[in-house]
Picture (cartoon, rainbow, N blue to C red):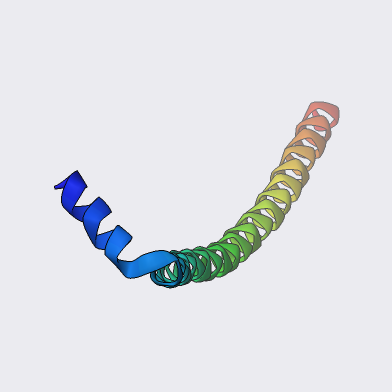
Length: 89
């Protein structure tokens, strides 16, 4: 099989071999360009997903901060009530 390929290439001559190599290089270049395009599209999709995830995390952080404030207010109100009850006795 290898000898057959070598014989086929030899029968093409130098110009034929160069032409075949050029066609092969163009094909592999096109395949690589397609792979890069697919990777770029995937990166853009991932970027949007990450932006959405960051937005969710920011909203959750803000919600947790509000919950913490509310809990601190309730804790302070209970502490004040406890002091009022203690002084009322």
